[in-house]
Figure 1 (tube, one colour):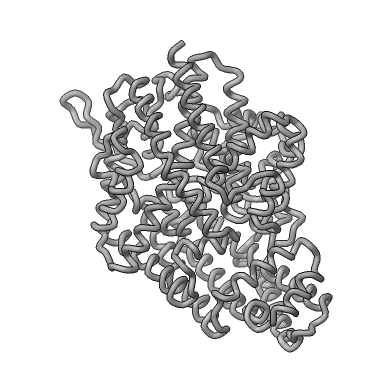
Figure 2 (tube, one colour):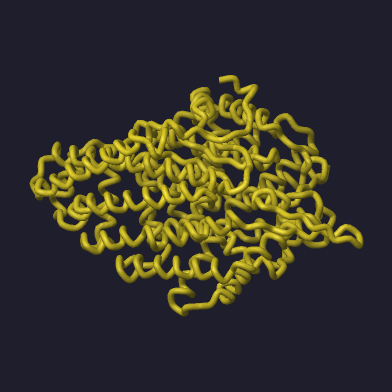
Amino acid sequence: MNFATLKLGTWDLSGLVKDPNGPEFIDFLESIESKAKAFEGRRQSLRPDIPASEFESIIHDIEEIYEKLSIAGGYAHLRYYANTASNEASALVTRMDKIAAEVGNRLLFFDLWFKKELDENHAARLIEAVPVVYKEYLRHKRLLAKHSLSEPEEKIINTLEVTGTAALVKIYDKMTSAFEFQMLLKRGRKVITKKFDNKEKLVSLVRSANPAEREAAYKALFATYKKNSGVLGEIYQNIVVEWRNEGISMRGYRTPISVRNIANNLNDETVEALLATCRKNNKVFQEYFREKARLLDVRKLRRYDLYAPLSTKRSGKKFAYVKAVASVLDTFGDFDLHVRSLAERVFSERHVDSEIRRAKRGGAFCHTVAPLITPYVLLNFDGRTRDVSTLAHEFGHAIHSMLSEKLPIMVSHAPLPLAETASVFAEMLLNERLIERMSRQERQLLVAEQIDDMYATIMRQAYFTLFEVEAHKAIGERNVTIDEITRIYSENLKEQFGASVIVSPEFGWEWIYIPHFYHTPFYCYAYSFGNLLVLSLYQRYKLEGRSFVPKYLDILAAGGSRKPEELLNEAGLDITKEEFWQQGFDLVGEKIQQLKELASK
């Protein structure tokens, strides 16, 4: 492929499904049905003394069915994200989700047998006998056993999920994707009205060099969300209640966040250590906000100014898409040629949707359909520096996935906290490459941007999670109103910023703008985890050089086949201790000191 002529465009999904209405796809869905029916016939094989070879054969059968479901469902969701206004695409998502739930219910008996019915001795025998790649996966299943319900109850939950929480999230996405925004910008005595039918275009202005434009963009954004807060808030409350009812009342988890921690195969103590360390270090970023105010020549930073560029000239710089791609590929190539070749494969197979257009899902993501299928990457590329970093970030995810492509689908995905490791590491590689070619003033600007990113991906995400802990508790125990949830979020902002930033009242409504709160409760600490972890890994890379590369790639290649604490402990990282996480904040402090030194020269 000639990367010099690469243009913005849409992805090609034909490698998954050529025609969702054609006979080939109908046959594909029928093959899922026939394999599920055949699998149901294996129920009688499930006895305590089942031979290990037969047990392993059952696992392979499940993998084949799940991989087919993932291809059908992955196609439907990717097609929908490309055009959320398409009723046909929306209907296909609903249909595929329903099929997945129904088939999942029919396979459920094996999962419940292994978790609930099989005694400890025979479970240990089978775990010991299977290939090593499955051992942690099966141990984790046994850990989840005490939170499993009966087969009829699990089937009811799976069935209701399609029209319950999943439907609420879909409504949230559909509503917010269709939002139109009206920005009122004062210029002298005039008030200029600008209309936006795409959230990404509006949000890009929060990094504008113009203070009035930043303020107007935030006000337009939150005015629209506040106007719709009745419905969006009600959706959130119902998601939280459902999360609590199922997780605590029915399954017996200790706390709402424990549901996520155990799903991530992390101990509660590890996450508590992470969040406690973040909370103790809020003054580190408060120091940066005071320094940034000085560099911007203002008395105190407003929340509108948090991501303000230090230079008007730099903020207006636009990157051509082809140049951005070249920078990212060259960065990967300098680190490891195989890593670059993996990234090139995503482009060569046209698995990237990069252009901005109406009704396309906002933001960016990388989606892996199956281990041996090259991942798909969605971007909304607008040419800003931030978009180049996002490109590196999402392709870091893609590389992570491809490095673990030889693993079975059951264990190929890294657990959530490790899922951000490769993406953030890729951003750091890119930034260090860029900084080497810069003047002192340009280095100062980039270091400031790096600290901005560290705030956004470490402290901001930790406080998002701390808010969720409080919000889930308040909704679950006191049945609070939407206005009270907004007050909880406002108090969260006060603790986070202290006296270093002026926070205007409209930011209290920011919580209904954060999609992770709806899509994946308690997801956000994974960013804090990943970023602080990467700071430590990157320090190791700078100290060890090329000898570090295979160790790092081995961590990524492990996918979800190892427990995070054990995998990282082998690399000399004890993530159960606050002292480990403090190292990351010490490095943030060094960056802030570096910025002060660059500013004083």
